[in-house]
Each structure stands twice: as structure tokens, then as C-alpha cells.
Length: 153
Image 1 (tube, one colour):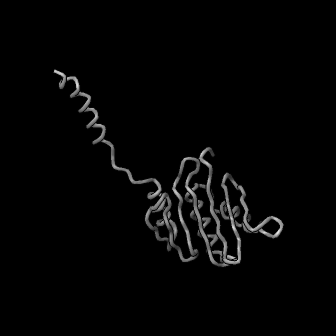
Image 2: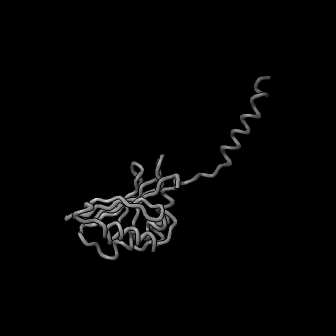
Image 3: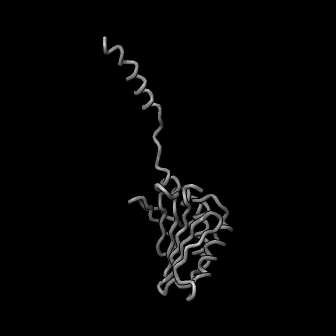
């Protein structure tokens, strides 16, 4: 008799598990969208919440998956002290797709951060532009920029 009481619950549980479609990770989906939208971009594997990206305009790039207090983040580095326009274009395009903001706004924020680095302010700056947290570091060995957004925004 006890089996007849438990049977409906088991059937409902089995039906709910079978009805849910298999979902890919959101970060993987976002990386695929980036690869489809940006020519020359190749996507690596997800390791430790970070997906490595390769592109001819950058020496190192990655897409950070969302965490407890941050949404996704974009990181790009180049070995040139004065990066080419292709570097800024890549980072602005990728950040615009990740954070659903216009490419012009992300480009303006990234270039503004790099242009503000100097002896007085320092060569490592954190700025905010259009609800984006932009961290840029300029050194003789190159430029490193990361763009992220807090989850509450």
C-alpha cells in the first residue's frame, strides 16, 4: 500500500527531470556568440571560470564567467606600449557584446582609461564609465585592460 502513495510523487519527479532540456553553460554560449560576431576570434576551453580567447590583435585575451558578485568580465593584453586601433576595436566589440552596451561607449571608456595613465595618476587605474568597471595597466611591456560590471547594476 505504501508504494501506491509514493508512486505519484515518483512519476512527477521523473517527468519533471525528463522534460527539462539540456542547457549549455551561459558562459560557453556567450563565447560562441563572440566567435560568431568577431572575425578572427578563436575560443578555447573553460578552465576555472575563465575561457581563453585568441585573436590576432591581442597577445592574450579571456572571458571571465560570472561569479557571486560580478557579471562576466573581458580581459585583453598586448605587448605594445601604444596599442594599435585593432586592439581597441577587439576589446570594444567584445565588451559591447558581453555587457550589451554600445561599442562607441565601451571604446570611449577604454581609451579614456588608457589616456589618463601618467606619472601623476599612476600607470594602473580603475575607472567607471557607463556602469562598467575598467581597470587598465600601462607598462613598458604593454597594456592590460579588464572590463567588468558589478552584479547589482
